[in-house]
Image (spheres, protein in one colour):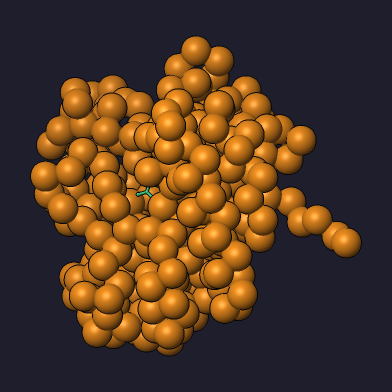
Length: 251
Ligand code: PXP
């Protein structure tokens, strides 16, 4: 049996968060040393072996800015996966930008980072409308959902080719009693999604420790990883941080 390589999408949002902590509202063209640049981070990650780059343009623009996404679209050599909320404004932005992929994610202004999967049951109509528009433009669509049967079945019924299963609960439980239970949920979720013909991606809270369990999950196509790579890169540099994660993903 041929085992395909597990792909790495590097999420650069937290690099933009760090920049905004000092330079909110300051333009790159201002002449000030607006840093760190998430697009440069993305380019270094690509050179070190990242298979794609993920950026979340939030409605409140708290980290990634429109200008970042447009520059990334122009200079990236791999694939740009744009995460957006399910709104008319963000759909229009995606259709204008034409990234290779769009991942629909929930947004809550109170959260620090995306805390849970999409409410695919409650918001089915809205998600379906956006999915149709984005698919019709030839962009690959995925839904960021919790690894439960109802969400996975609903995603399949909506007609997306890809789901990204939320690994946050597993990552939070990694050192606790519920670690095996949460891993089991991901395993069952991956089996279910695969059985329905969906491509299975995962992301959120994956790090250099828990990757050893994550990679044991069957049918995985791509992992989206951000915070841990940026954190490691502060001490080792981006190249080493990306290479090490890729080596752990595909031992
Ligand atoms: N996937 C999605 C949909 C996300 O929202 C995030 C976090 O922004 C990630 C993956 C990456 O999570 P982390 O930064 O914890 O690796």
